[in-house]
Image (tube, rainbow, N blue to C red; front, top):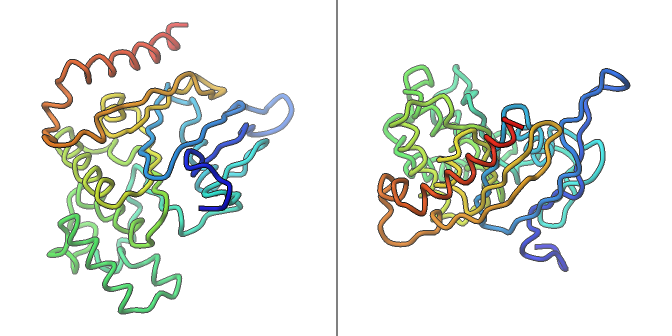
Length: 265
């Protein structure tokens, strides 16, 4: 960590605003977003459609430069995309002409990582998500959940310090989605990785996140930050038991109430 940077500011958005277009045709997507969180946190962002969740993530990924303000990781300003930040989208965006193994190793290959080291990383992560036996298959031969697991592996083999996920489970059926939530949690809990997770599902955010950030309708602003205890719950990790517990239901309903209240307003 850069000297003098507090642990709580491993990731920092400092007064970030984003405006698309100019003059009368301009649209303000984000307004004065200030947010920081610590290394190892799992931060989930929720809010009404069009509130700027993805735009905020894109400034951290380096895909989009803020109109005003600054974004930094570990004290270093974000100037563009980099292997220190892995990105997973709603659609896996895999290369159909490359096998599972070749898709997984694409990032290290492009960076010139030693082939033996690259193979070792790929083997490790394919085994961790249960795709080893499919290493010679092509994406079209995989289920939707398996394709998304491969997309996550492709981000993780670069050994990023930060994983950015934009609605990664949104297109999956309910059972596959819960399975993927459990698998992602297992990776996060064992790796200590920092995660920024965008979702429309409040239930998903409360289950996965160490913190849930609620955003307003456009222009996106932070309405509330809510610490969630369930991600770091020790012992019994039964997903259905956690999601049906009174404490979980109460937090979910509180956040839904905030979002519905904004919609009605």
